[in-house]
Picture 1 (spheres, one colour):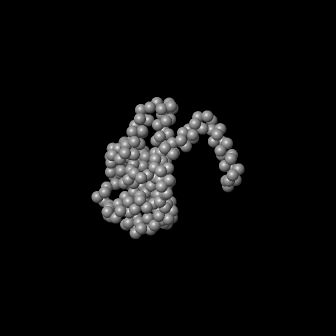
Picture 2 (cartoon, helix red, strand yellow):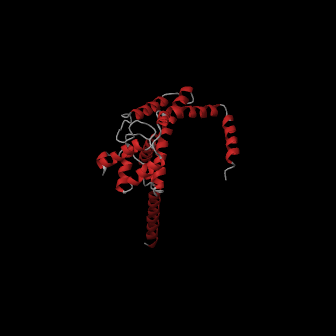
Picture 3 (cartoon, rainbow, N blue to C red):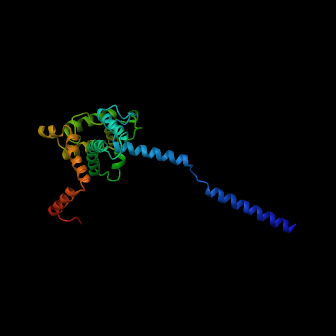
Length: 240
C-alpha cells in the first residue's frame, strides 16, 4: 500500500509540474493579436508621418494637398525602387512632408514656450479617429484658427489651414491656454510682408531644389556636402 501510494504521488506531482510548465510556455497574447496591434501601430505612425490635413477623411484625399501626397505615395509604391522615377517621387514626397513638418514644429515650439514641455507631442497628435462631434468648443476653435491663418505666419500657405489644428486648438481652449497660444504666435510669427508672401506662396517649389541638391550630393558621393560641412565648421567652430 505504501509503495503504491508513493508511486501515485510521484506520477501526480510530475503531471502537475508538466501542466505548470505547459502553462508557462503558453503565450498570454496570441500571434494574431500581436500582428493586429503591430498593424494598428504602423497605421498610426503612417498617419502621423504623412500628417494628413483632414483627420476625418478615411481616404486621405478630400483636401487638395492630401490628395496630391496620397497620389505621390501610390505612384511611388508602383515604381521600381532605386529607379530615377522612384527618386523623383521621393523628392516630391519629402518636400511636402518637410512643409508640413515645418508647420508642426512651429506649433510644438509655441506649446513648449507656453510650458507644455512634456505634453506638446500628445497635444499635437491627431489620429484619423478624431471626431468633430467630440469637440467641446468647435466654433471658437475655428475662429482662432482663422485668426492664426490671417494674422500670423504660422502657416506656410494662403490655402485654408489644415483642419487637424482645430482639434489642437479645442484642447488648448479646454486647458484655458488658447488665447495665450495665439498671443505667442502673433509675437513669434508676425504676418509676412507682401514680397515674403509671394515667395512662400508655394513652399514646395522652394524646398524641392534643396532636396534635389541633397539627392545629387548623395549620388555623387557627398563631396559637395563634405565641403559645405568644412566651411560651416570654420564659420561656427567645432561642436561640443
